[in-house]
Image (cartoon, rainbow, N blue to C red):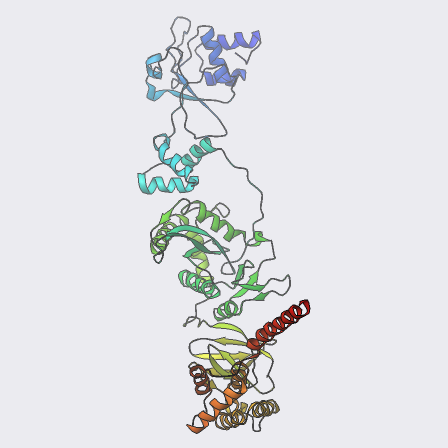
Length: 558
């Protein structure tokens, strides 16, 4: 025995034991723990009084043999509690039952907790964990990288496990050990005030087009107050997809928050900046449609949106880790079931409340959704050409006077094209969509007099050839400023095929009554008889020069 009592205390414990006192009473009187007192009594051959005999002490304990004591089953207290425990091996090779050893009923056996390892009492075998029979399934889940929560949920859903999460957690800790944790601050927000969004890595899903497994992207939106999350899976990411995922999340929640905290990814932020970040215009207009303000985090500061970071990691480690799906619909259905059945019903580790209950409190504080969804568009920048138009998908749209040669911002969808001032965002012009090759110019933007730049183009065409100049003047008289691009195309043909060939083609067009650039181009493609261009002449001149030098050298040598 490692706990050694002095002789006086030892004799006192033995004397009280012979009087029939219980271990609890001896501990209270002598301040010696019950396990140590029991060990000394067994060593002295004194039977320990069985439990449950209060008020039944014998009047003359010296003449009455005390009743046999019931065994004490010692359970060792460890920091890694709940793991699978196996009883120590008996030296004889057999493990007798506690009731058979003492003759007492094992159902009434007293459980004594061994607080100290050196108490001197031999610990009896503890009961095994309820997770021991599911060890193969738990180890399989661990090999696939799933955490204790995911394994417990799988056991409940698949194997009908009736134990609690803590049992699985302790069993997993025994197998893999407990990781170290880092301290972090908690950001508290009012109901309906803030949501955090982020992308994460999703599961492997079979693509219907290629038939191969592809990695999907996981979009997560988490409410700051209730921690209610919406998780959606997509294959590809773009500006429109990013904005559409927000809309789907708002529709699922039945409302939207006043602020959205996001990372500096390209789909949401065009240019990160500490004080004035440039928000993607499509994303900003979509949020403005719903009454939401975007708040990008500082660069390399993901802790500001730690709630959604935790939500992404929760989904990656718990339901999606090691999983594969045959279609995106199957993956989303599985994720939605987990969200409703497990994520919403859990007790959050920070708030210590159920997520669904807190979301019920937060939902009335969300902003109402607009009646119509946001109309998405494409955007870009264009240069205003000499005809005062910009080109959008092979169609031309007029800009206000004074913008020739300058850049304008363009937004377009299937119905309209909008020209905006790139500096102020002011709407310059709005046009209906035109077919390929069509023009749309407002009457106030048509010049009353021929611009000087157009006059210079007509003069260049007249210098290139008589018939070229005549055809270009006729095109300008019929189409106005819309003919500027065709005049430029005519001059380009003169460089490619030679002025003589183009002049002949223009004369043929005037004879047949056509003043179209396309007629001249097709005529030249079908009748390519033309003088050699400079690119063709230069190699010939070089070869002739080299041959002449060779002949002269041969003559001098003779």
